[in-house]
Image 1 (cartoon, rainbow, N blue to C red):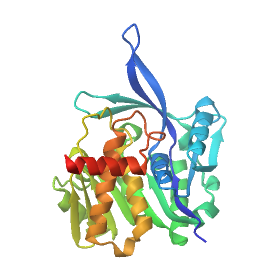
Image 2 (cartoon, rainbow, N blue to C red):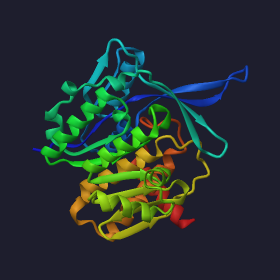
Image 3 (cartoon, rainbow, N blue to C red):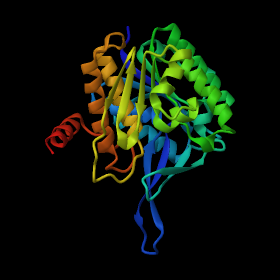
Image 4 (cartoon, rainbow, N blue to C red):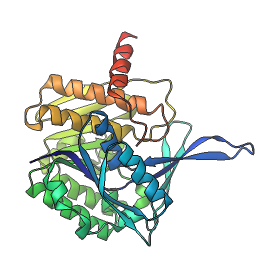
Length: 323
């Protein structure tokens, strides 16, 4: 019985984001729970989905803080492990004036990199309808083996596999290594969510449709989603392409978690409609809601605990269409 809607494997970490200045004029940093795969699960919980996480944190205050926050959201954290020797991974988010982000990571090593093959629980994957992962669990050999084991288990247990590369360049020895691991991810996945700059980097094509065509020529991926920030998003499904514009939001303060929010909404639609029979109307509906939710999270600090409620998204979309 497939009793779990989505299981994700990868990183759960602390995002330190700026939240004002001290009396001395120094940046104040807020400790926000984050980590792309777990963020996706947090959005899915807003739809009432049954979700589970596989990963590792340090046996420290940060690790236990993350476990408590995720469990409070209703994410099954029974496959979260604690490393006694390596601390929880920390990410410091720097926001530029043009809205771009830069990251500084304390992960040399970080506890998420210490996940081992034997800690991948096949039973939870066996019970899952969708298995979701990214590339931060593929940056180093040990956790890379754990990810490959989970992917093999997902394939053998007829899970749909969802992949978001979510490349963070500072975490790779070099981008050629990153490219090789993206290729591994593409060889397994049924659903690919990729950002505009990632598809240009990976394929060498400035035009997103040409980039998607190059990927599809080598990898038989059923659904490819390209997130384009302020320009909206696209879905490439079989022989059709659907594009939906973004929702501008004057209250945007940072974009952390926007792609994960988008991805969570897409996976919810797949659970509703099934991957093998999506219509154009369903793709438009899927992208519209995902764009709206992604726009809303940019008005809040952090990601894991900041996912928008479903009614809030619907109201925002309706109001945006009226104006």
